[in-house]
Length: 371
Image (tube, rainbow, N blue to C red; front, side, top):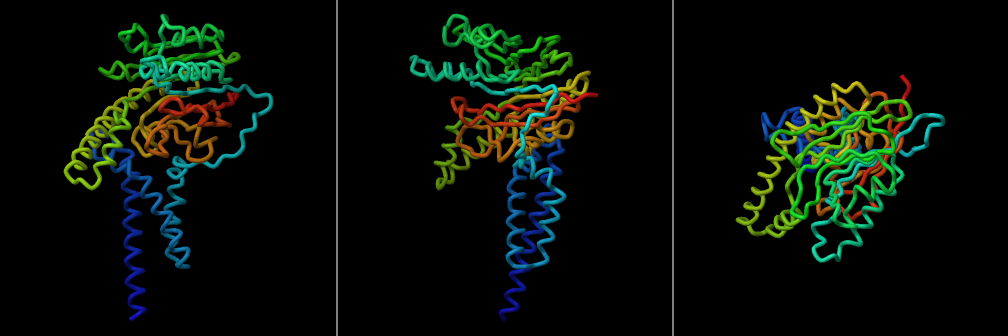
């Protein structure tokens, strides 16, 4: 009887393991399906990290049981290592190559430097701290999203505080002007001269866009993109409402449908936007670094399209999980730096010391490789 029970239990766990393997395969397949053609693929791809984690747990289970069935999850890990490495990086050397041309790039969604929360001036000191942190960062290039500049304010005159005061070249593409006559948009600041520049507009959206600038880096030209794709449109309050609705079936369904609609809208919009961005990138005559707030995780069509064409600085030179979202959902890496041939990332850092925005800044160091 005992042997029969063991066989049934073993078969049960084997079936579950096989189902997880199919889940992984389906998730990987859905990474290649444009959500604007089949939007459910976006949700399946989003679930891929869960399948990958369960596969590791099955490996540990079969290892403890000393069963040859550990071969099944082990093969998934080996064959799918590229997808695991998107979630967690293991690079521990950031030594600068001697005699090579290097370039350090900072990317940061600055959340309008929290200007809209500063209704009574109480947040001004924190905003000023954030602006000074950016202005004095040792990076050669800053790619800033949700950039905010108000010439009529001593605190929020960021073009002057970051660009003029520290003698940086800049390109600021204004998305719109608010009621305080402040400019909001996407910016690139550089210690190297800007040779050429332009905007990539994503359809009717005026907020989401990418800007690019060709920089003369010690005689070589590198094209830098600062990108802001369609937002998830999910606020902290939405997540808290969903959590609080657990136990109330009707309320939970309502909040769940609300989140699903917003996610669906974002999946579709970003799939269009990333394809337009890649068209421009593929036509670049120079090596490129693509920075920004992509509002999508590594298990997404957006990320997958970029990763198929470019290297990711976190994967190649980072360590740990590298979460960049500073909000109630942990472990989300939605800010990235991708780069092309002709460059090599040798150092990557997520700056958790600067937690004043809803995003953490990220910086990477690159070697300009000789042709």
